[in-house]
Image (cartoon, rainbow, N blue to C red; front, side):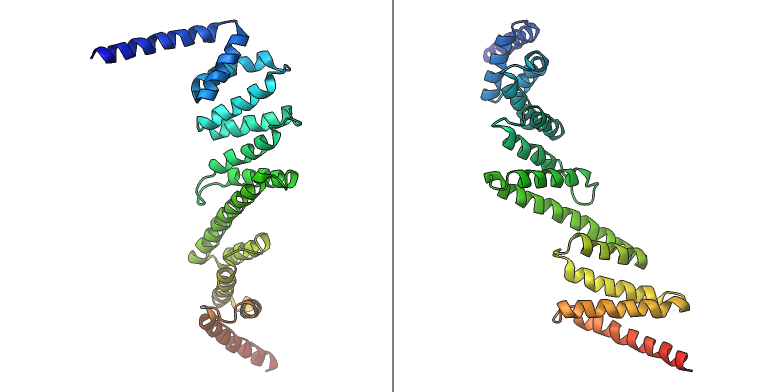
Length: 266
């Protein structure tokens, strides 16, 4: 009980001293103490001190380190939004700093950390992709460029996964036109996607189902698109696990097209 009371008393004195320091007008002392807190890993206290010192030391030789540490305080306090913002501000304020490369990477990395699971809005992921691409273009030989590329690929995969699931949702809802557009856009946006085989297969399936449920005047055109999609698929994946299924659809479509051709001859 005595030790708990003593600990509480010490903490009370420490907090009291810190509050007095926050109100102090000795900015040099506050700056040195903020750096000391930062280097000891007490980012919360360092952040509070830096917050009041930034406008005071703006334009001085201390401003560069102050801004850089300030951004890292937010990062270490797991506030990725604010950290990314202040790393970005650092880049704008100190473009020639020796810390600029690191700040550029961290501005993107904090957005990467804030990127949600694929089913949610991916605005932050897209911003992170842009920032990582800018970093790689500016610092192609940096030690961080390899990591940036890996993280960039991970974010792009997340976008693909989101788009792929949206296209699948349209297919399950039997909105075949929307499914076709979504799958085809994926091939345009991600030509090297890992989902390419599945996408091409589902384009055939979507065209086939779309044609069978279309009005008579539209069936022939859509069956022909299904056949074209079939040949695109088998030319790339002749041994696909979907081959028998797409071959069956193609045979049915061919029979339907022969019927249309015979009617035209008559």
